[in-house]
Length: 232
Ligand code: C5P
Image 1 (cartoon, rainbow, N blue to C red):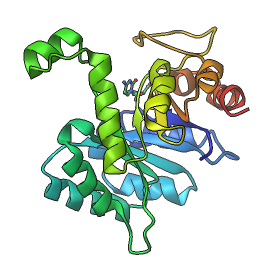
Image 2 (tube, helix red, strand yellow):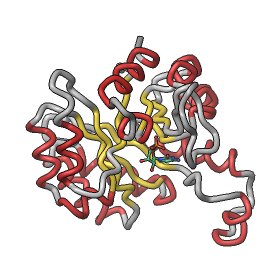
Image 3 (cartoon, rainbow, N blue to C red):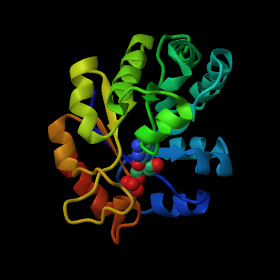
């Protein structure tokens, strides 16, 4: 599986996204479309991006009963996305149902990735709000293993956790890692960050990079720098 840079398209709407994409004439990009953009612009935005030759990680983080997730995944499969995700908290049965919904008649399907514990959930909130009393690292690794058992392709995690995830779940279990910053760049609201080169070193399979590219003075240059550092 090839290493790749995924650009987080956290834009308010379609116009801003299209303006950004128009900067890239030569590159075929891998774009992460999240809930805000998808809910605002609808499935049409996916078709439009695909028609320009870009790949899509549709970051909708599904979490519902297995039957509903299966049917929703069937819709995403027909949108021809390249990667999508679910919450591992939905259980192994839900993740298996997601795979069933995503799989085409010929057996092929988009990559399916699990979200473990969101980085916005602290140990304290997990214990008090969710009544999960194990250490958060253990919970993340347990969810990763559940995703592996269900047949998913990998998880979203911090680049700092990528090595451990590969140790537990195997080298070919994908790690998709946000929290990436250039060595000379602004960190912003991210807390635990790594450079693209460090993420490569530690074994991330895909890095998700937003503002260091989208808010750069020259986004094309920033993207190329990122690819050069991470992919080589
Ligand atoms: O702009 P920035 O590079 O921080 O964007 C990172 C992207 O990855 C955002 O879309 C953010 O929501 C997402 N993300 C994250 N941390 C996680 C999971 C997702 O930053 N733990």
